[in-house]
Image 1 (tube, rainbow, N blue to C red):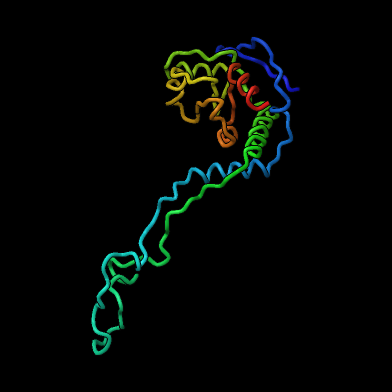
Image 2 (tube, rainbow, N blue to C red; image 1 turned 120 degrees about the vertical axis):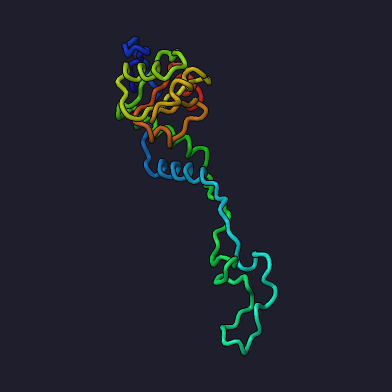
Length: 206
């Protein structure tokens, strides 16, 4: 079972904790990770674009001019694509981009993402995260933990002070155990979990 250090907000080691191998020491399946990441990104797409084809544009029922004798090409409707205010050829239509992924596959991908963070030593466990609702307070905590680059901070319960302190720091995102997802884990350089969040995570996924 993997063991990691537990730090306080001053960056000092206070203890160690053993991570459950059912979550943090599984086989990393890259195909599963790719599938879940692709589905998660696709499900964010709104798919609300749409324009009108020539059959959907209002008007154009009357023939613009007579068939013969004008010297012009014959036209059947003023709503044909070549006309101003005409319909669009191969018009884009609203569609659902969502991809359904089985729950077991999602859990396997999440465990694989967590395992990769442990293997790369990019996971940090905090004994607690109690700070003022000020950006400089969170900046100091990250500096104490020697965190560079993007960081994903996960709490067990909503904490307004932490959310407000991290809101204006580029590359830093906060979340909860019940909103933990593969894309956010892989998209950030460091994963920071409080002990309470770790306990809750192991209760849910072990």
